[in-house]
Image 1 (spheres, rainbow, N blue to C red):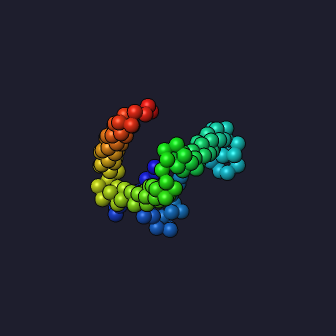
Image 2 (cartoon, one colour):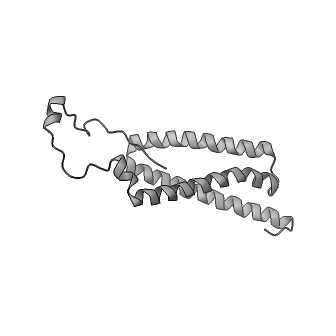
Image 3 (tube, rainbow, N blue to C red):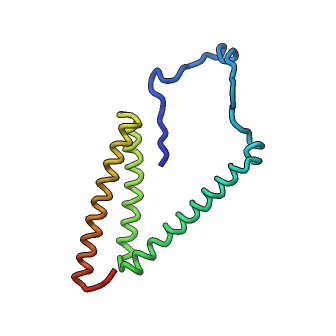
Length: 141
């Protein structure tokens, strides 16, 4: 997840046009397009991220088949689950942006860590319940 934070009032120094000409840059300003294309680390990371993206998209298209085939869920329920996930992602991202703007980046990470702990705890509890239901039906998972 990527967080983009806007600067707060007084956090960025505004330079007038006349003063901008006087400012000298020193140090490394970055690579241009030509240098980037010749950089082996750029290509290694690009290929790695492409492989990760393809594997994630391949898995996400197979979830619906798995849920309907192996788990026996209806297509309507699988579609509803996908839609709820997407809506949760949109509203969650917006909420996280508001939290980061209000309380700061560090405090927002603590809040999100608490949400992750609660989410995993609830997930583990639901897995335990599913195992109990399968045990009653005398099916091994």
